[in-house]
Amino acid sequence: MDADVFGVVRSALPRLSAAEARVAERVLADPTLVVDLAITDLARLCHTSLSTVARFAQTLGFSGYRELRVAFAGAVARAQAEQERFGFDDATIDPGDPVETVAAKLAASEIGAIEHTVAGLDFAALDRVAVAIAGARQVHLFGQGASSLTAQDMQLKLARIGCVAVHSPDPHVAITGASLLGPADVVLAVSHEGATAETIRAAEVARTAGAFTVALTNAPGSPLTAVADLVLGTRAKESPLRMAAMSSRIAQLAVLDLLFVRVVQHRGETVTEPLRTTRRAVRGA
Image 1 (spheres, rainbow, N blue to C red):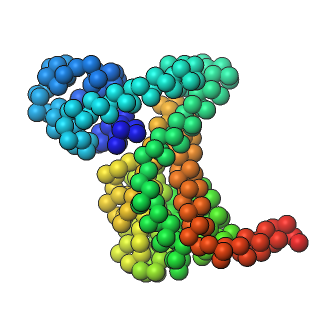
Image 2: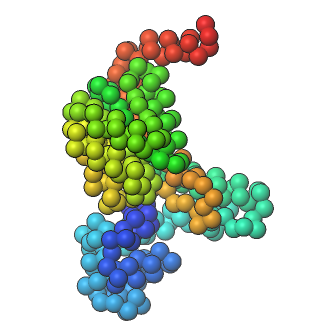
Image 3: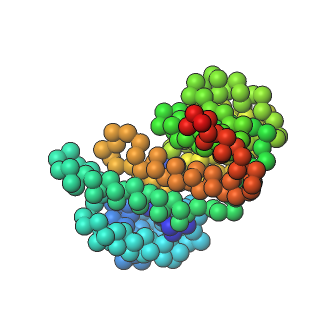
């Protein structure tokens, strides 16, 4: 849980009460408050009650404020180490940043996204998905926009090892395919915020049809997770100056690369001939 407690707080914001949201916004603005202040002092600073702060910690999945403080202390220490590592206090890209600074901040953001994501992964859940994909009749991948590119990347990888893997960026085609799936099939639905209506609908249809449905998202408790049998989480923070999906895409690809390697391991030597055949086909030999 403490691998990226800041990400956990940001993801929880939509489901917090108004009073809890005030606490969340205050501690995200200055995480050292949780480390430095007793629960009564933080409650006073946020103009709320002690019970609200305690409930806030529990809503995030902690046993109480003490466990929340430990998680924040670890996260603050790691953030300080990252600042020293990359040489600046804030990885947010400003409009006036020179190219060298932009490059350094992007590197910090994307490296951090991968590290936080891997640290927070549920490896047992990921292996369940890998085993399911390795033995699936078909694997359907859903995603729109930038998540469509992530889904397509995984579809291409799976096709190379002989898996029947399907992805269409057209939501109607995706939903049509989803309706024909069954218990022998696996669905992987990708959405950073877990709120893309077309992806949610396709996953819902597939699950109703009986397919094992997996969500890959940065937002635990999002609408997409409600229609999934299992959730794989990323821990990426996009810059407020978000011109396109960057760290979110990198985090998704990192999870899917790991998942693909585990699928290959579970399928064993059966992947050797498809890899050789597809390599020859691409090379024209």
